Length: 144
View 1: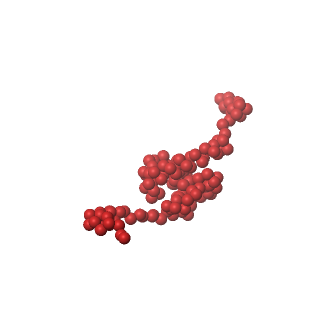
View 2: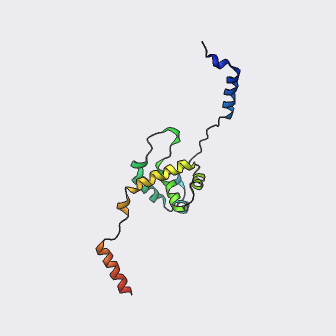
View 3: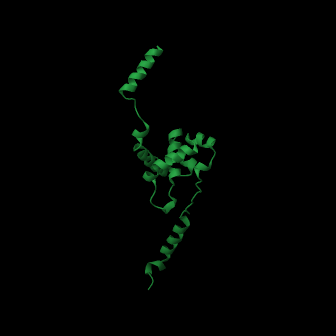
């Protein structure tokens, strides 16, 4: 026996209205950012294609999405979004508009990349120790 509430004309009209108001999901084509020439990449991300790929290789184990649902971002796209934010320092809306993404997606992506980069902080940023500081000071004294 069929459900009795489906025969109610009010419910049927409510379903029709809901179907009419439902937005169709739009999946925009997100092209590969590495496919552009180096001049474009330097202008947008402040890195060459080789530099971006090196960063992607470093961060891939930490930021890879385990799901294939919902057209998840690739590692290259996530790194390029974060690099664009670091290079320009603009608002998340501007980066989202340029990359055809929402503000929330941009925010989550930048956070994920920054947390992954923190693991490599001591590998790439080294402050001078006591001996190197002393030699730098001596070099300045020789100049003066």
